[in-house]
Length: 156
Image (cartoon, rainbow, N blue to C red; front, side, top):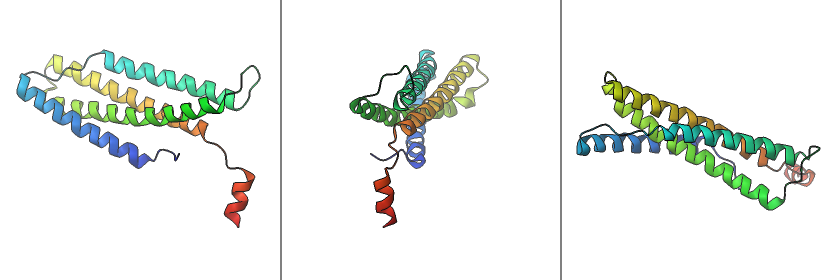
């Protein structure tokens, strides 16, 4: 399993932003009102980011075999690495989507209701960025360091 490339996350965020902008424009044209941004979305992204950060801290302690921690089974470490990959990608898509929503709604900034939606969308983008950062950190923690045999193979 290879690590997450920044290019992948940027592409996913750009596709998400395009989707958010198109969805907001279509919703405005069809429904005749602004695209709703529930306050639960930014809260959820911030809670997820905090959860992944705490999981990463615990994982690092277990993989470093710190006193008072149980060793992490290899299967759980593998699932944790897969979670890290999924979290960073999902955070990029959601963050991009709500960035597109914020951009699409920003021309109506002078309306108080829309201003609240834009602020909620921006907080969602920040929470998503924190989620991506936590996912990338968890992914880095789960990487297996190269063994001495791997270094000898590369040198030969």
